[in-house]
Every structure is written in structure tokens, then in C-alpha cells.
Image: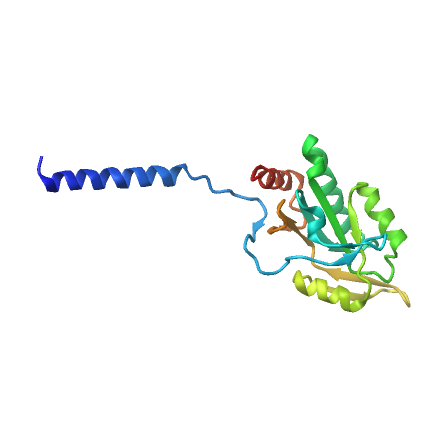
Length: 200
């Protein structure tokens, strides 16, 4: 066997090994939009319904779903919260590793008692956050690239809120990983949460 033949065979073997290694790497395919590495939606610092300031560090070790909404929302908000509650139940014994955080975009009407009762209606462990001022709300929404707008209602003095109908999902290390669109469903989100939990 000539030296050139040996070099060719060794090179071919090396390429084969690399190809097999590449095939064995399993890339995670999420149902939600994968935004791993995003420079926005990093954290928040807002008071909960008991006045305690919360940040993402409070939920370390859990997969956390963050949603901006308001308690008088007729469809998107309650549907989203109900889905997250269903995901928690679908996780079985790992359900306590899922945390929902509801950030009010309507602190004027979402008083602490109202917000506390609202989130507890879906699950006692769910956390409601209420920005202390319009500026604090604006800052949080900007940090998460969330749209919200007060819209006048049909009767004098009444109003509703337009807002982004999606959630952010953080991994157990507090890093934003997924953007979940409204109406994605319980099973797809459950699968995504399981994959994030399996990374530990």
C-alpha cells in the first residue's frame, strides 16, 4: 500500500467519523418559536400582589411562562392562563417545575386583590405582577417588546386593552428561550416545557 493510498484511506475514515458524529447530534425542535440568545425579554423587576418585588431569579430551577394581559380580557388572557394551567397538570409530578407569571397591562383596574384572585383562579402557584406606575409598565413592555394600548369602549368611561397575544418561556436558568403564539395549544407547549426540563 502506497503512502498516498494510506493518506486517502485515513482521510476517508476521518470524514466518515465526522459525518457519523454529526448525525448523532440531536437538535431540539420546539413547537414554539425558538428565540434562544435573544437580547430582549431578559428580566423584570415588578411588585407582586403582596407588594414584594419579583425578578426572574425568584423562579430559578423552573420553566417560567411570562404573559402580559389584563383581568377583564374576554378571551386571550383567560384562554392562555387556562392552557398554562392544563400544561402544569399534564406534566404530572413535574408540574411544580412550571411557573406562570402574569404581568398586568391594566394596573388601574387590576388592583392587588383583583389580580390576586384572578391568577389564583387558574392555579394557586401562579404569580401576578402589577407595575406600580405607567412608567414602570412602559419600561417592562419595552424590555419585552410587548405592544399594549388603551382603547375606548362603547359606553362613556369604559375601555378595553389591545395587547400582544403571546407568551415568553424561560428555561430553568432564567434564560428566555421561546416565544409562544396565542392558541398554540396545550400539547405543543407541554412538549416544549418537557424538552426544557430535560436539559438539566
